[in-house]
Length: 411
Image (tube, rainbow, N blue to C red; front, side, top):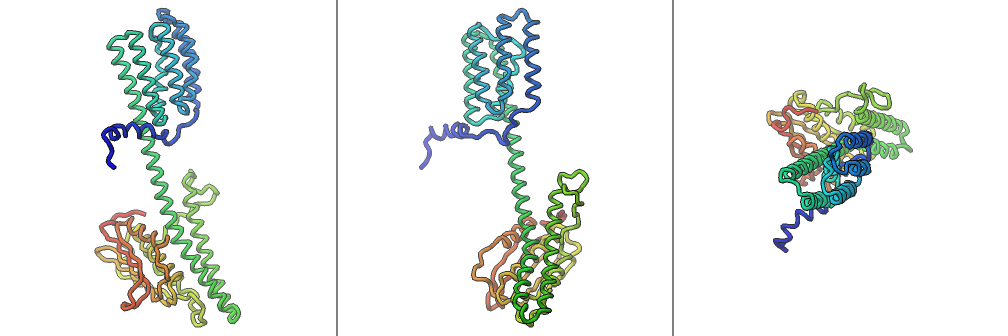
């Protein structure tokens, strides 16, 4: 149903009314607040002593001193403090027949600033109404000159503008930090999945093979345990490396907070692709026993891997690693996985294919999602799906990273 003209005009006001308080939230109180209060009180007394021409100067001095503590709650209760200070000052001005004309009343601008900088939408609108009402009442009862009115309006508008500018800047910075945190969480999720899941899958498969031959071939079972030990050690090493790199951010000497030197060894890259064939084929001597899960992996590379940037090389390795892991975990009756990498003038093409039967459920999991994200970050594409029976069957992962997108990429 289309909105009426009245609803369209009032929606900005409604949006502002429902706006939350500033993000990030303000500090409750800092040492500067106490210093400001401690400085203002003697300044008010000194000004009242020196400016004998001011009417009702000692009454105004007492009132201003009593209102100084509102500064201590200006961030947490901005509208309340502004309403208290402005209301008391306006009523006293009406009673005495004029403005205080104290220079130290400038601290009221801090309350005006605070309501726009930290307050909610309701506080901002209410604060504007309080200031406007006080100005109108002073204009009616005090009879200020046009110059005074224009000057007061200019000062208030400038204060509001500064408050809104700082509020917007802090909010934008907070949103950017949150976006970066989400991106970092996604990156860590991909890295954890690609590294830990790969080795844990190998451990699980080897454990199944060990159970199958434990009663009939103890020597073969011992070999499986040795393979599991190697894979577990690799998993722990990669986990420790990731944790140390994460924890070193706050260490001034480049060491992690637990005192250990951070592992700054380079991340796996395209040159490590052949490791997949070695690790995936480990324990292949059990194939003749009929043990489950044994899978031969062949890696074929065509082109210059050394010329790839670190980011592109790491992406190719992780894509191939995850594709092999998925084949080992999900491809039924698979005996072989072929990993083909081609580097040419157009970029890098990765093709991973197994000869098994896809699982009944082919819904994308975290692994496939992570592969697509890795390829997309470098301007490429990644597709995964079953192969038609006429073409040999199995499951295929195909990724393409165009050279134009990752030229000059950094890790």
